[in-house]
Amino acid sequence: MEIVYSAKLLTCHLQRGEDFTLRLGTPTQPNTDDSGSAVDYTGCSFLCQIRDSTEAIIATPTVSIIAVGQLKIMPVVTTAWQIGDLFFDIKMTDTGGVHTWVLKRSIIRVTDEVSQ
Image (cartoon, rainbow, N blue to C red):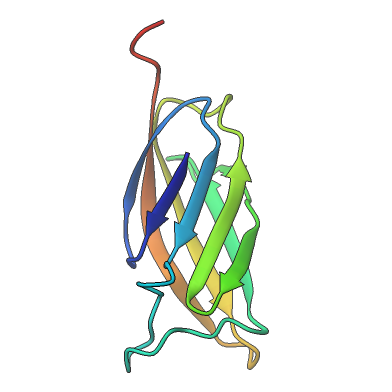
């Protein structure tokens, strides 16, 4: 399942076993800076960690630049994930070494299948 979103905080609903892919920004609604311009992520590096309620790391997915103002968390297999809430963010380091959060502490709400 690919989730497309453009926000600083979000809650994603995911059924355990689905691949988790998140795209931030779209061609018509890119991520923007304070002046309203699409963010140019060229030269930036990213760290994304998915953690459980005890802060144990569940996954460290790759974050890729797909265009100006657009990022993508690459697919993560969720078959072994626990049912309940997991937490994640995306920290960016720009070319000057400054850290900012593209996405602040957000939630992945993992559910199980209803029809089994």
